[in-house]
Image (cartoon, rainbow, N blue to C red; front, side, top):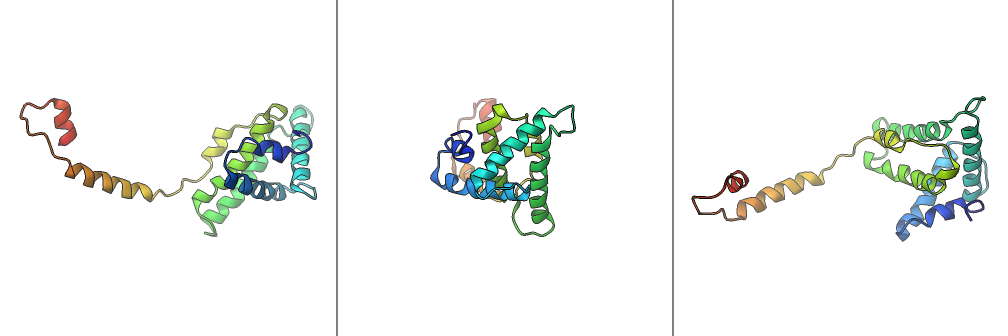
Amino acid sequence: MRQTRPVEFALATVRFAYTKRQYPKRLKLFFDHIGLQGNSLEEQAQAFLSQARREGKKKNNNGNPYWIEDNILSFLDFHKERILIKKEIKASTLGTYFWPIKTFYDAHERDLPRVHWKRLAKTLPRANSYSMIGRSNRRDTQASRISRPQNKTTSLCHMLFWH
């Protein structure tokens, strides 16, 4: 199954049904972006794996050991342009394109050249977190409702916490 249906093999590690439905679509976008040939997603995945293996083995010859990383960066840069310049998608959406690729790679990593995922993840733009604003306001409101200790001999910890 690892060789004949690589996408299905990779999705076996995914727990949620919604994610299993979305990841193949996102992988297809990535494979189409890098120009892989194939009539189906599984054929494109096989082409990706064989190309990555070939490129990884040709370190001293005219191969590119960073072929996977270069293609992922190209794909992410394309979508960053959609975020920053064209304003077509939000920054938080970019992770939905990144994680399916990583999941696919992780399922087949022992056959592929190493990828520096932390470095790639750092290239993702930060999403605005508006929910944190509401949380801090709620916390301040809840803290003001709690009654403060009336004992004058309170500890330093209590004084720092309540004041």
